[in-house]
Image (cartoon, rainbow, N blue to C red; front, side):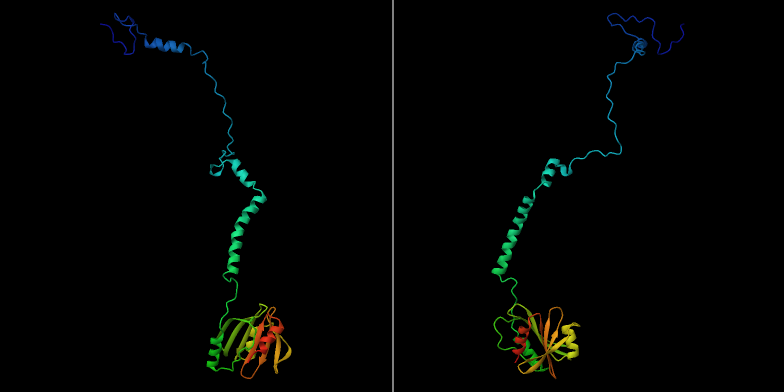
Length: 241
């Protein structure tokens, strides 16, 4: 009885059965494959990759995917092109402004009727009320109010003169030592007397370019103050009746 053979042992007799192709032993195939192991392999060399600098970030496409050429063309707009673009914007604005001023009365002062304020002051009977008379149509009333305040009551009427200057007519029972600093500030300084219709007024400087005419009476103080010229201040003060 023959001894047991290993499972991977190749039989000595490799003659195939009738009608079958010859079988090459597995070991022979491996031997044939390894026969050329000592020979150098004919492998096509791969080109060396370019060295990568870790400190240099990869290139990015232009923002928004737009070509750089288009961005360059936009940045090279001439001053003439920019001036034309600005002109296109300014023309409609100028037309609207002209329409507002010419047809809608833009920037024209709102003229009011001061009669209710004068009537309210007379009804209060806090002091004798004087009202301008005989002023030309160039004088426009733009504000008017009568209010009781600490220490007395004030009738205040604002005018625009024919020259477009602002003037206020103030009639008050507040003591002059409190009224004048409040209306003229610390800059108000007496400049001497002036006579108007037989009454002695005092000339004062005011804040900034303001001038003032002040009439001191026992039961009231009249103040005409504004940035108008002195002849217009005198005209308003002289028209009080």
